[in-house]
Structure formats: structure tokens, C-alpha cells
Length: 308
Ligand code: AGV
Ligand code: CA
Image (tube, rainbow, N blue to C red; front, side, top):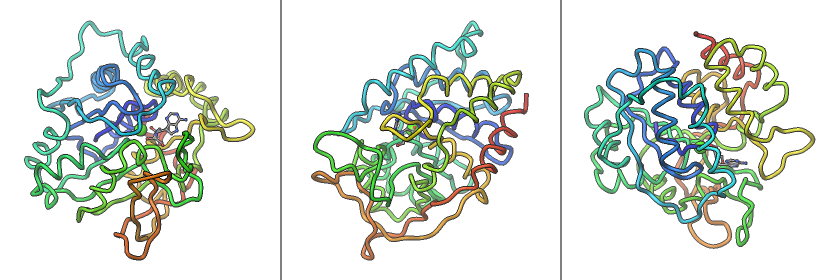
């Protein structure tokens, strides 16, 4: 897994740790939607506290990648709050080790030494994968697929920035060239786009349900993460929170929650539409996750988190 320190990235990590059929072989963190150090620390603490036996042999790496279009500081600051949650800070020491290697090189090692092919789950920008592919083209044959939260083919994305036309999704916009580099590869791409994540906004109903189940530590933690961000009340704004990355993780563990179709697309790298993923017959195929069983998704999430 490679994540970028957003509130839902941490919850996605927690879910992957809890899935019976998933063997997590490495986690890397890129300082995009979160600041790097608190995102690394919070991830280590989540693995320590909630990873159980999955902690065995699992290590983390830091990315040294930088994006062309930085995330708003108002969003990134949340990584400091999560890292400071008392529930993550009861232990005397932080145990999960951090590799000396930067994320893209760590990814290459893990993919090369993995038993069989590895599934990559990216819940932030694709920059570290783009760099890994440039550095070690041989890994492509050892990657089963990349499951990515990012992109959209809707007329409206979620970037509202000066000098942008609003058609892009943020993870793609952060590093348009990196996104295009992964598009240029031969990898299978499963894209959890805004088409499906727009169907799972954070709601007051979801918050209430987590509050009622807070005797389960993992659900208490999730409730705290989602206490920090704005839910959907009357209408969506630029800050409204969705369960973007959590749906992405859930799709890995339970693919029948979503509908998938294959479309051809390109990535725009310049100008006012940079970061836009666009339908194009001459583009490469991607598997677009465009619809979700909303209730099934929330039920699956609860089932995984109730385990303690
Ligand atoms: O575009 C969605 C991606 C997901 O990987 N991130 C948040 C998720 O982790 C960026 C993002 C878009 N809108 C946001 C975002 C918002 N309102 N607050 C924080 N991050
Ligand atoms: Ca993210």
C-alpha cells in the first residue's frame, strides 16, 4: 500500500490490516494530502495497535516525492491531529520499523521479493509508482494490478483551484505527469473514481452508527478520524468528505461491492485541465469502478472493524 496521509487513508490502512485474505507486504507514505512525518508516525502506530499478527515483518517507508500542485494546508494539517490521538499514543514506544530506502525503492524491493505477483493499492498520487517503473521496468511483470483511488470521467472533478477548470480529481492533479507515466505502462489499472466515491459521503447517520459501536477500539478510532472533517449535510462543498480511500480498500477485500466497466482513457498533463482523466478511444484501457452498493460497503467496513 502507498498512501498519502489523509484521514481516510489511515482508515484504509486499518481495513487492509483487518482483511483475512490480504497479506500486506509493505506500506509507504507520501506527503501529499498529509504532512510526511505525522503521517508516517500515525501509520506506524496504527499498525502497532491494530495490526495484530499482521505486524510481523511489516515495515514502512517514506516517500521523497514532491507534487507539482500541492494540497491545501487546511487538509494536510489533519495528519498531525490523527498522530496525536490518545488511542494511538498509549504505548511507550513506536515499534513498526521505517526503511532507510525511499518509498519507490522500497516498493521495488517488496515487489521483487514477493511470492508471486503483488497487488498495489494507491490511495494518493501515483508518483512513487511512476518513479519505481522508471527505475526498475522489470517490476511490471511482477505486479498483478494497481488499484488506485483517483481520477474521474464526470464533467466535474474535485479540484477547485485558480487556473484550473475543475475537471480533475486531486490525486491525479497533484502529479499529472506521474499519473500519465502509470497510464503509459502496461499495468492493469483498477480505478476507484469519483463516480463511485461520490456515492459514499460522510454522513451524520454513519457518524452516529460508529458512535454506538465505539466499544470496539477500531471503530472508536474511525469515529475520531471522521469527527475532524465536514460531513455532507445539505449540499456538497469543496471540503465535504467522502470515504474515497476506504471504498478503495473495501473493493480489494470484497470486489462484488462495486460495478466495474472497462473504458479507454488518457491523462491531461498541461494547462487548465491538467490531471484530468479523459475518455478517449485512442487511450489505454482502465477498469473503472463507477457504482457501489452503499449499504453493503458500510456493513463490510463494520464487520472488519468489529473484530476486537
Ligand atoms: O480526491 C480524493 C483523495 C482521496 O485519496 N483526497 C482525499 C482522499 O484521501 C484528496 C481530497 C479531495 N477532497 C478533499 C481531499 C477534501 N475535501 N479534504 C481532504 N482531502
Ligand atoms: Ca488519499
